[in-house]
Length: 154
Image (cartoon, rainbow, N blue to C red; front, side):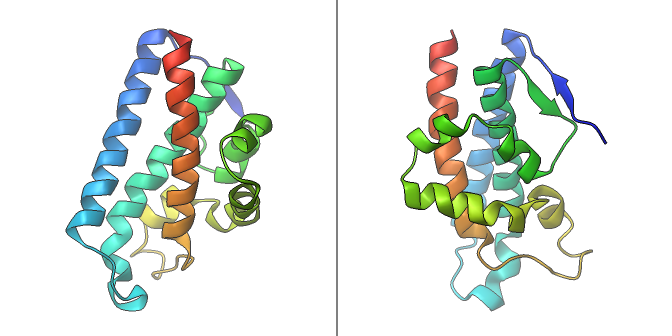
């Protein structure tokens, strides 16, 4: 399937930004409600947190492409495709080389993060054990870029 690109009006960019905040807040609340203590026992308890983080990450990736390239890939949940569409230098400028390398090396393990976590129970409980760490690291970098781009696009 070919990538479809979309553009948005300024009002839509504002809505997208606020949706990112809402999904981040939902992830934060899920993490506070069910703190993870033992990975194998309580793994299922952080599924809602990861679903919210994964969707916030998708929105952030699309928003970064939109803010920095003027368009984004629509109708796609594949984190590899979305990550590869990001402006590489901008990502590198907003994290250490260790974090950047960690993200590049691990994005393929989380390619379908939103779908994998959303359908965790139907998919035989399969998820990479490092998912929470990866999502938190990626989301931290992406949000810095979104914040800067959003504030300076006005």
